[in-house]
Length: 402
Ligand SMILES: Cc1cc2nc3c(=O)[nH]c(=O)nc-3n(C[C@H](O)[C@H](O)[C@H](O)COP(=O)(O)OP(=O)(O)OC[C@H]3O[C@@H](n4cnc5c(N)ncnc54)[C@H](O)[C@@H]3O)c2cc1C
Image 1 (cartoon, protein in one colour):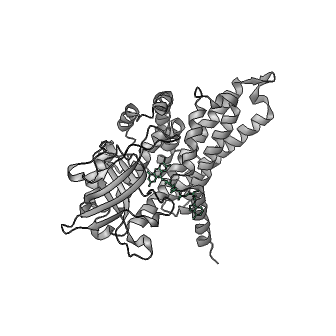
Image 2 (cartoon, rainbow, N blue to C red):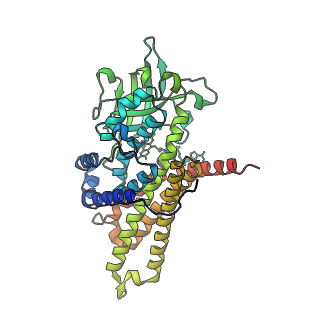
Image 3 (spheres, rainbow, N blue to C red):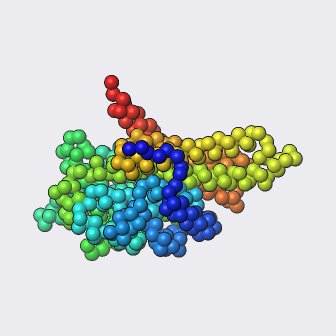
């Protein structure tokens, strides 16, 4: 099947992107500085996102979502991230959770969760990382053991859970077979229900504590937390796909979800790079040095040229990965390339924009200061650049085996 490689949008995609761009310009950009400096959850913005249906973009219409494809989703994520990557962070883990349910969930699980996820009534987090591991997922120590009543008791500590406090569901990967060899065959994904906003869960959710949110360089507003499971009990029907189908299948499920997650992080890289380019284009025409706008100095034009080229290349790689996935083709290599290139482009464009702002780039008066703190996250989340290179290298050799 031929896959489009240009940035053309369907009429529907154009309309949705225009709507999200307007929302970003009117609601996100004017308010991001306030929520960033207070490190406060942007509740009013999130409420409006629910009304716009942005929590159910990819969820099928039968469950109350918009039923759109990954390509449209990454276009939306680019627009939101152009405003503030924390907003896309609030949607991202939710999107991954809904992807896991749509692809691997049992009918009961889909019926139970997807309609409320589509409306944004409940939001999802996903949790692989632990204090001692991130890249090496197979080293997960948090474990679950089946009790006599059939429920699984989860014990252990998770780290860096985006939306860890305010989510109602956490798709959490834990060890269920400590003897498994290879290790990934002993991991299971549980749908851990919790009380949104509660640091100490009680009743059915007792045994799950959410410590105070982690203080971060950037990516503020959206909370990143640890999760402490200490005797938390999960019914067997909350194993993703059901106990029979899902036990010890969690690693493959999560790796599949990370592939779409990478296209999503790539879109965030495009969005932040695009915003840096816009800010640089504007500032460089306003600021004068040596008797003329700095945009008339060739060294600054070269920076703008490199930035615009990187933005466009990152966008094309991201759309290519999403379109391949939508066409049912392999996109693991392409998603890795898109994530690697777009996250590095995001960091690089933000740094060039910062340089173009001179001393003012260092001031909180200018938006670039926030972008400068936000951009590095994209180099880390959903697999570091080193891990992307490992994925790309491995996939290349698999595809071109002699
Ligand atoms: C703000 C934020 C939000 C996050 N949100 C989530 C979330 O919602 N859910 C979740 O599960 N996780 C989340 N993470 C965790 C994130 O996925 C991990 O931080 C990331 O995977 C890297 O893992 P690590 O921090 O343990 O680094 P490590 O794995 O310890 O890596 C440290 C360094 O070593 C390099 N390295 C590791 N292995 C190799 C290798 N084999 N070859 C070469 N270099 C290597 C890495 O590239 C990195 O440079 C979040 C992190 C941050 C900062």
